[in-house]
Image (cartoon, rainbow, N blue to C red; front, side, top):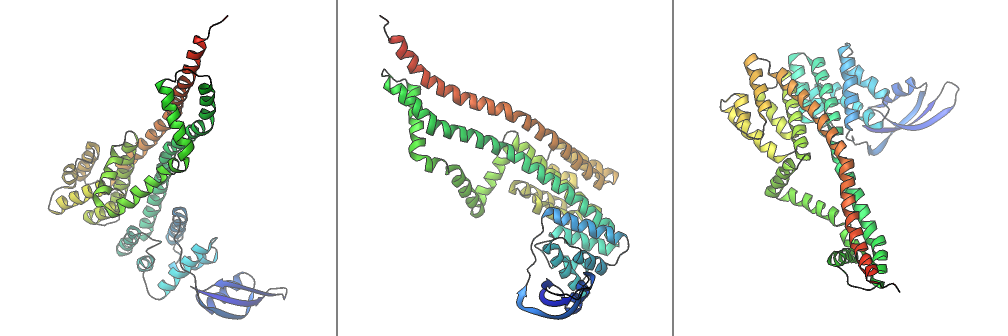
Amino acid sequence: MPLFHYRAIDTSGKVVKGETDAINEFDLESQLHKSGLDLIKSSQVKDRAHKLQKLSRRELIHFMFQLEMLFRAGVPIQAILADLRDTAETPQIKNLCANLYEKIDSGSTISEAFASNPGIFPELVVNLVRAGEATGQLPDVLKEIVESLKWQDELASKTKQLMMYPAFVTVVVGSVVVFLMIYLVPQIIGFVTNMGGEIPLQTKALLWVSSAFVNYWWLIIPAPFVLGFLMLMLSKVNVRFKHLMHASMLRTPYIGAIVKKIILARISDTLGLTYRTGIPVLEGLVYCSNISGNVVVKDALEKARSDISNGAPISQGFASQRLFPSLVIRMIKVGEETGDLAGSLKNISYFYNRDINDSISRIQALIEPTLTIVLGIILGWIMMAVLGPIYDTISKLKLT
């Protein structure tokens, strides 16, 4: 959208200068008039156009919610976009609304205008809106999209919360170990060495570890981050390694089970959403595969889709892949038999959402005792390695 430099006059007769985005000069004059200004002169800034920036999930939810509410109230789409543009709190929303307004004003449908901004609107949202336009149920589809986006935002927050706790434990324990090995242990070991006497094996091991931290801290501390970066890069260029890494993630004790539940919850929610809005199951499974985020699950979905396309029931296609729990298969089968597949998929999402909350709460409850035990083991080893030779030396002293 072009950027205009303008001169205007307010109600008191004061001349005001500024810059703002507008579709054309008439749009600029309308915007200024709403702000209590009368346009005197304007000029478009050459070679200057604002590139649309990707919205955060919260911004997208807010935008879609406003769109759904105003559309349900019977307000025309162009009036909605013009109002949202004029009242936008951020430049991103303002530019987006102006972009959509311009495209729809040129004859595009809402879905076509959305599709012209793939970095902002996911392909699934575009196709759901297109299905809503075709069936005449766009307000209902927009409501479904908003509810799904809200649920996904909550799920993403829980996923972040799940990953933050193990990272917190690792950072705390690692920081304590580095402090002990670099600062405290060398001082204590120096005292023990000066006392003379034989140094036991566990003290020699502590000396070796402490010496390694003191001399090579610049290599040891960044090593985990470098290793993680290399694994990430390797997973992008090597399909087998990526498959192995994703499979290992699903098999990780405690964490893997929750990650799998989160993925299955997203799949059931997406499949239910597409099914309720009239998108065929086979097409819905494509979207599920794209949003899974795990190549192992993606391969299983593609194989299940292949079986279903060859005539197998949905439940049988899922059952042929051992990745999916019996609960998912049973509920899908019940949905097929009763004709309420969308309801069954919604129940699966609800079940996993509640189970995810319980699992994360249990892991959080285990963090504190785990941290205490790990630190206790480290401190116990250091105390035994330090106090052992001190005790031996003192016991050999002869009192006169």
